[in-house]
Structures are given as structure tokens and as C-alpha cells.
Length: 240
Image (cartoon, rainbow, N blue to C red; front, side, top):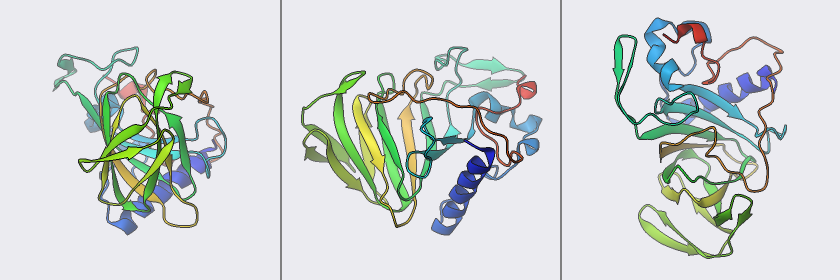
């Protein structure tokens, strides 16, 4: 993606949050230069923005914006740490979960994907448009089962056929077991949607399984200055 596209997507997410009454961290609109030594905890936990187009190159139709609020410390391979950790003068407790905002624009989808290590995630639609989830159980890494699906929304069971859809409205929460593959869709022509995901800890490098595609991480085209702090662009010099 171009840096201008990344900046514009995050700006739109921030503006939507303000308009819809969703309060973001005070650092959500900081530039990278504003993240000084006092923010080392954010750097160690890789908090910040991520703009994803899955390497498709069609962000208006396939993609989303993520703002990570809480994440476990990980080792050099990306595995969550399972014991308290000392970094510099600060002691970090074990964190068994992650929490993030998901911003999906009208007309966007997130492709079919599931997890094996991430045992469970709760996705709450906070504001904006309702979100449709298309659901099917994973059979293996490259195919989906034809088994029926039972899924919880606000503690109420819903029975669906394989590849069935359920729409989650603002204020509602869907519970997704790790191996329940899902597509996220926001209808075209209406509002964008803001969701909050809380999930069990996992290795984000290896535990996002897309049965019908292989996402690619393409280099950013630097056509304008960096405006926001991406979680994978924290300055290495500040990690101490």
C-alpha cells in the first residue's frame, strides 16, 4: 500500500470513532516522534495501528484497520511469553489475551480465516453498520467442512448451515472458537463499522490461517510522510 492510503485509512477510522462516540487511546493520533521513552511499554507490547489489505491491493473492497490496545509480550519467534518478564526497570506480568479495535469500511470484507492456537475470540460490534459473519468449520488448512455451525451471540445459540451467515448489530457480541473460519462483511453504501475484539493469546505470525489465499506483506510505498504509529514500525532504538 501507499503511505498516503495508510494515513487516509487511519484518519478515517479516527474520524469515525469521534462521530460514533467511541473513545480511543490518547496516543491514537500521535505521530511516531511523539512516542518517547515513556512509551516503551507500548513498544514492547507492539501497540498501535495496522492497516491490512492482505496483499490483494484492493483495500476499498478487501481490508481493515486494526488498533491494538493490549497484547502479550512475545519471544523472537512471536510466541506469547508464559512467565513474567523484566525489561529495563519495568516488570511485565503474563498476559493471556489481546484486545484490539477493528475498523471496517462500508463495502469491505475480511477473507475467510481461522486460528488453531487462538482458542476463542469475542467480537463486539460497537457502533456503525451491522456486520455479517459467514461461518464454516475448518477441515484442514486448505478446506472447510460442510458440517452445520452452532454459534453464540450474546450467550444465545444460533444454528446455521455450513457457509451460513449471521448479522451482528451494534451492542451485540459474537463468540468465535478458533477453528470456526469466518468472513467479515460490512454492506456497501452505508456506514463504516467499529468492532472490539478480545481474544486468547497466539502467535500472530503463524496462527492466522487463510484456506483460500496466502496473504502477502508488500513494502509500503513512501509517497508522503508517516502520520501515525504503526505497530510494526516502532523505532528499534527505543527498545531497551
